[in-house]
Length: 77
Image 1 (cartoon, helix red, strand yellow):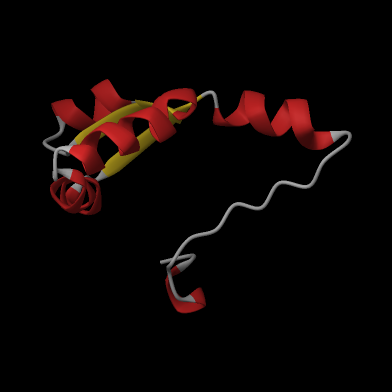
Image 2 (cartoon, helix red, strand yellow):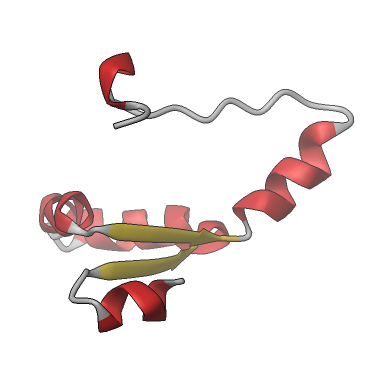
């Protein structure tokens, strides 16, 4: 999916969910976390690998909440 979008001129970001926390710590320690957030905000397609596996693993026994900051009006735009 990312390759398809990139061929059509969109930007894409591929990230392993299991590594997000470590990467956040590293970026914060070198003062680059705000730049990373700007990069993510500008990206057209974000792919979070392992997210479905985490949800699957937790689905039977734990609650998982996925949030976003979009207004409801923009959900189906």
